[in-house]
Image (cartoon, rainbow, N blue to C red; front, top):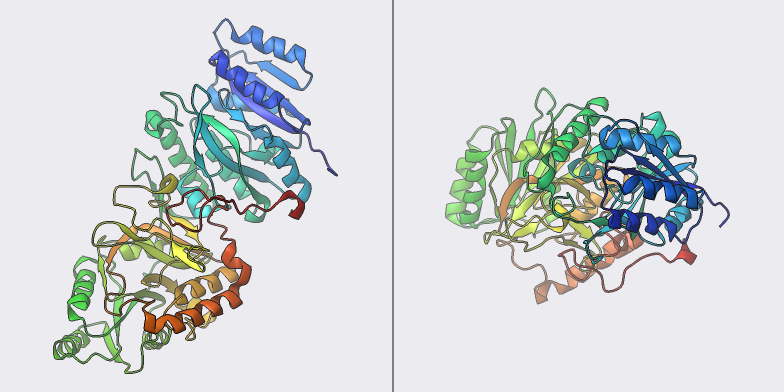
Length: 547
């Protein structure tokens, strides 16, 4: 290694179970990377065994520094005392009863050697019980700001540039329970996503004991409340007005709804259709009866309907205020007909919607627009359900099914998905065109849907074009609709359509290449052969020699 940075491990201690404290400290002593110091602050423990043990440790190894606080101040104050001991350019956070993987600091040092601009490093993690059994691994994605607002995805093992931690004031008093999340938010404000590095390896083992947040987040509700305050204050410092809430105390995750711009923009809801009046009526009536957003226009693209009842219904719709019906008798081409409808629409925001959907949540437009209006955001998608109450769409992930696939597909209602990712807003590589919101100016800038992708992957292609501009595509689970999935059009991969599907697949591979194999929002440790976030048989990790 050309550089060997000193990494300072911060450990706040208060009345620890001695066997677990010893296990935590031994996990540092056994590190394969030797250039570390362990900075322990004891927060006035009153157990008779704690102080003698810590004193003997400090005497046994010059890399171990211990300070005994004179007054109990809780974990933030105690962590700041440990921070005062640190002399390394980077600090890592280790709780008193958790354990580091033997190579944790080695992989951190490798990341630091490859880049001198790193401000924050985080890794994958798992849990460990009182008997040393490891379970419940969390294989994370690359830094994902919207997911970070919903959960502390940094968490363990978090390593920070020491100077930056001190610059932002260290750990804040009053944020106990979510002091790490608060710190990561404030460090992020002084950094850039490019300087936040994810190591896709399990480097940290979080002790799961009865009464701990690792065991059950709801056992420490004060931690969720502290996180709520941390996110609210972060958004305020960023100049963003938003409502932040905890929608489910059992998961403790957060939901952000950004204030809508004033005046409210016109949202054009664009719906292609062909006959199947039974589907179209359900779709339109659910929009008209349930939608609370007041400024919408309906743009229906009739792609060759011939049934009298459908034509009569469309004629009646045309008479409604803010409603337009366009006729196109050409062959079905999802991209072409939506592009045509867009040109006839007048809204500053476009909402492309399949005719076989049904609105479930009245504030679906507001929830999507909350993100779509932001200049850093590209396309926004909703949570779509099959009629049997299982998920049809909760974000599109690259590499699944060769090109892309829907994560959490068929997950039953009531299940939160992989570490709550089915129920949390987050950046994803793509969202389905069955319900996709995008600003008109952006849609025009990327030349809309590609007409060479008549049926398959046009939505993925649109989203990747937005991502190419540095924008994030967002999945918003609180916008919910039923989706019968192309009932009116039939099966995409029926034998007579196989040639077209193969052609569109080849086009995507040629255009996007290796991007399709490396989704930043999906761990290389998770399977591409399944859509349930199961562990990959062979991780797609880059070897050390290739790094």
